[in-house]
Image 1 (cartoon, rainbow, N blue to C red):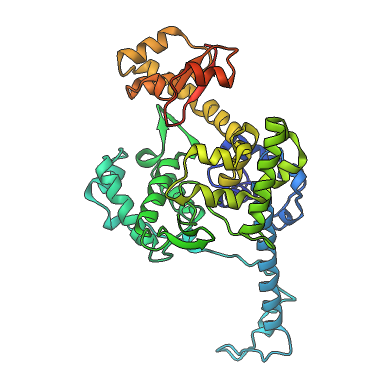
Image 2: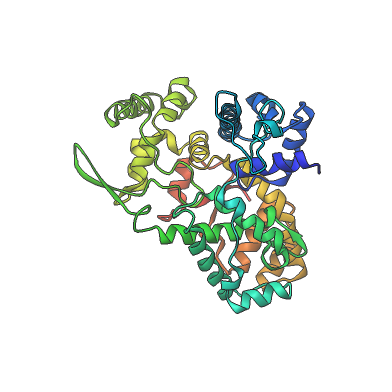
Length: 421
């Protein structure tokens, strides 16, 4: 891979952490194919050029980041030109020559400003790490879980000296360097294959530790009032992969105006039922009231599913549940789940074939399930000795919603209901 391709790859990952290789590499190749010859050319890329590789929200974030970088580069270049122009007094060197006479003027030198952030220059304090960690990296071995947890604590403390609540993207830069430096000790592996970039578990541990340390401020609950009294609300900070946990009100909106829109959808559902989901008005209203949906979901005490279903009936339909998840995490749940099974499913199956952990795992493998996703779910449930009905309930292939409620003893927590075998 060329230096330019690697630079593009890194900037994409800084904005969209965890983008799978099978989507990242074609994206970079497409950009090169479009004629991108330098980092500065990225500002000319349009949304439709790369929409086939990433989701719309991810696409807009990426284009905005490239545009913002270009603006900062332009401003710095202007400052350098002004500083070296004749109207400024030239600085004299120790040899008596002015800076401009030595060839440092903007007209004679092409300035290419480089912006370096603290994660890119961050130094991991290996000397402060537990002895077990130091021995593990010296011997190219995996550290013990206890040593790894202690390493995360030391790492989080050091990072917070630079920034008390670093973003997931900033943490990603740090952990990717660690995995790149010591892959045999820290990379996520299944067998001899590295999965999902190799840094997902380390990134998750680090981010959770930092959120725990910040719980007294960023994770503290806030109190807000409305007509019915005081409502305790959960934190608005991004949490566990969520990028829009509880966003601010859209411009020109209030909770009163959003309540009017919610009631409008409730009225449509009352007259048209689930068929109203196809209406353009409903699609627009669901998108506009997203922040209000999150506010109700995050309220303390937590609302019941039954109550949410009354207030937001369309939220419980697949189309709007998927779009809600995409707004919450910047990921399409179906495509992301499909990619995860495709990327890791065969590796997990191969692992259990080589090393079945119990007789139930062996029974699952003996049945020869052809569907990779179904096989992986059954293997993981068997490995952890969990019952199938703790996740999945099966019923007749032609059962209606009323049939399911009448024949199945539905638990209080969510389940996947499979129609047929």
